[in-house]
Image: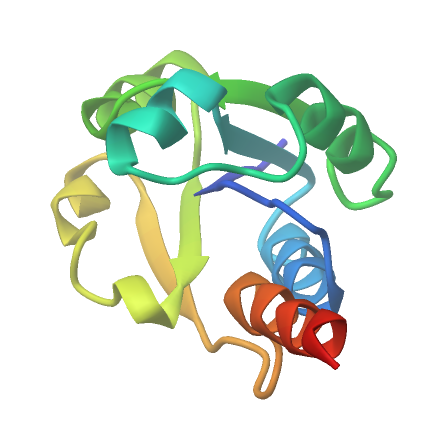
Length: 132
């Protein structure tokens, strides 16, 4: 079985997230999503609308996702790749080059982002629609 892993916050799930998960799953048979914990988001200076538990439940309902694990630190990626016997590490191309160090453990793939959609854009649009 070929295993794939990706990482993210996955707050306010949108078509860009679904596209990433679908394309990531095409690289193997089993997709693991390492989901940023609330504590890790706080360390990054981010605050999610949904809690870790809510985001995890949403991701587990997505048909492309086979397993959701917590992401607690930046440094855990190499450990996760080894622990879960991962064959392919997938991230959006906005991270291009940042995880090349994992190439000694597995294949590293950067996928293009879906044009015109992001969690930041959705939050901005929603804030603007509430102003009027």
